[in-house]
Amino acid sequence: MRTPLLLANAIFLLGSTASAQIFNQKADLPEPRYRAFSFAADGKLFTGCGRDDGNVMNNALWQYDPVTDQWTQKADYPTDPARGGIAMVIDGVPYARSGWNGVSTFTDWNRYDVATDSWVLMNEPTGDPGAYAGVFTLNGKGYAACGSGAVAEHNELWSYDPLADTWAQNADFPGDPRDFPLRRYSWRLCVRRSGGLLPCSALLLRHVQVRSRGR
Image 1 (tube, one colour):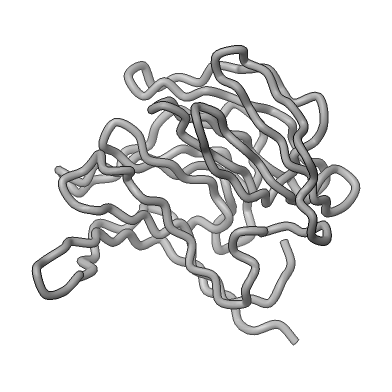
Image 2 (image 1 turned 90 degrees about the vertical axis):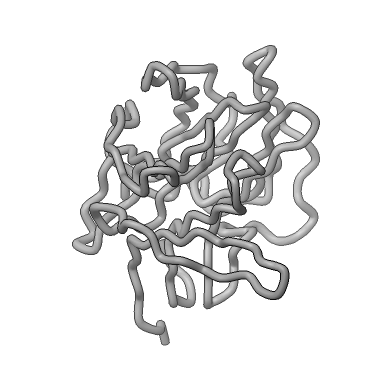
C-alpha cells in the first residue's frame, strides 16, 4: 500500500553557529515541483523540468538567488516537458538531461551557460543511462548510475568526459537493477548542496515525498 504523496516548493538555507545548525525558510518556488533536476552554480541554485501537483510535466528552469531571496525564471530546458531528469556540475559547469515524459526516456544532454542563460546541446550517450538515475562527479568527470531506461530498470554505470564531450560505459553496479539508487527509501528528502559557493551551506529542497515506489 502506498503512503500519501507530499509535494513541496519550499527552500531552506542552513546556517551554522557554534552550538547548532538552523534551517531558515526562504521564498517559495513560484510553482510546486516534483521529480525535477537541480544543481548549484555561480552562487545560485537551479531547478528544472519535473511535474506539478496536477501531474502536468514542464521544462521550465528556475533560479534562486540567496542574496536577494528571489526566484527568477530562466531559459526553458530545450526538450519536451519531462520528469526524473538528472543534473551535475563538473568543474563549475552545469549539465542536465530532462528524463521521462510518460512514454519515452530522453537521451538528450545539454550544458547550461549561467552567464548567457542558454543551453548548448552536447553529445548524447550511445546507450541509455535512463531517467531517475543517481549522479555524482569525480576527478573531472560526471557519472550516472542505474535508473529506468527505455525498456526497464538497469544497473549500468555511465561516465561523461566534458573535455572530450564523450560518454563511456563502465562496470555495472553489482546490485540488482533499480531506479532512485541514491534515494530508494520510502521517506526521501532530496537536497543539493552549494559546494561552498555561498556564504553558508545552502540546501535546495528539491522535493519531499512520502511514497513507497513508482514514477
